[in-house]
Length: 428
Image (cartoon, rainbow, N blue to C red):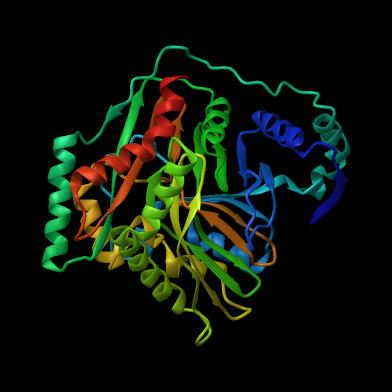
């Protein structure tokens, strides 16, 4: 059982900084931050889950817990969990070592909604609420962060430009043969023997783009610093929401140029075709468990503007039965279509054949399950992954290959998406 206490705060921004800084003293951390973005499906401004009461590493034990003794759970599904849902494998190079699935039941959960700070502590630590609030409110902690190694980080490419063009051409061959219509082709950038302060790195990465689905995660010696603009899947009551992104354009140097770039993205036939293909895929995924006639496209190819880029986003919703298992919804829709392609299974087989790196947590999902069966998960993109034990750091980016793709343009789109992560790491 959890004890719940609510406090009003004068300065939510300062409290967010204090919460994130306070998390440094825990080995299990999930920090979710909406960066003041709101939409019809927003739940909170930020939340922090720390400390583990129970951990879960497999689908069956996770499903049993959510069915029989539900409580808050925070964690991730890696992309390679696909192998448990379909007859697939993941045998590419992997230096990060994230498990396919990891969730923990937090001892302490703190949620910021407006000017209210909600403490939801397991009863065994509920006596610490007042002291923790006092620590946060009075800012009695060191919020600042420091770099552990000032040596410049040299980023390497797993796939060099000529090899990228060759592989993109092979994707196009599959498309022209009719094996697939679209595939998300990803490449890794990495550095070895580096030491960083993950909290400092995440703060800088988040400040560059201030995305709506920002996430930071520490699981012992493995870290995620995520500046994701994309929601994978959310369930609230009997409603299910998916918001895939397909279509990216850079920001302009002037308001006029910026507006023109957004308009061009909205009208771009190739980008719209990419987005609509994934919308169809998501509709089919949601239809597996939706009540008849409830799968609807609320927004199609709408352009949203963020600090670094314009993005084309669609919103697809459905209604499910009240007793629908949250884990079954994940199994029916994972991995997200925006990171795979269409048809999904065929695309994933070709992706495994042509990519050089096991995706792991990249293009997976981070988020939470609530006690009432609601959940919300992002798409792990625009993210830095770090194994502190092996001192290996990595980020990956991708773009959708379709029949109309020009490899040079896809390559440049990847570099645009990689810019924030590279900037943070090379200037650290």
